[in-house]
Length: 141
Image (cartoon, rainbow, N blue to C red):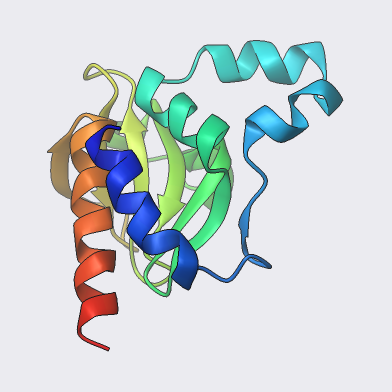
């Protein structure tokens, strides 16, 4: 069992199943060939997370999407620095999390003004940090 699996095992009992789930492994047979091909192009760790655990509200401060959306298409703003940013989640507040496709699929967060606030490295490092924050919030309740 890897770190992500260990952390998710601690978190899953606290997740509202109405807002998180549908692992892709359970619904893959219903997906179109185009959707399967799209998913194959995603970064490995993100794709594995979706297949094992799914998408939705992982906590009150983190939402993960089952598909990647172009930042500029979502917000309708042409910001040259954000070209190639593919959004996969949000803090359900001011920030969205995106892959920077021009920088080796590095995870970044982008604030409401369209500014890159922080760079996190790869998805595995990013999601491990988020899961640590969720576990800490559960333990402090």
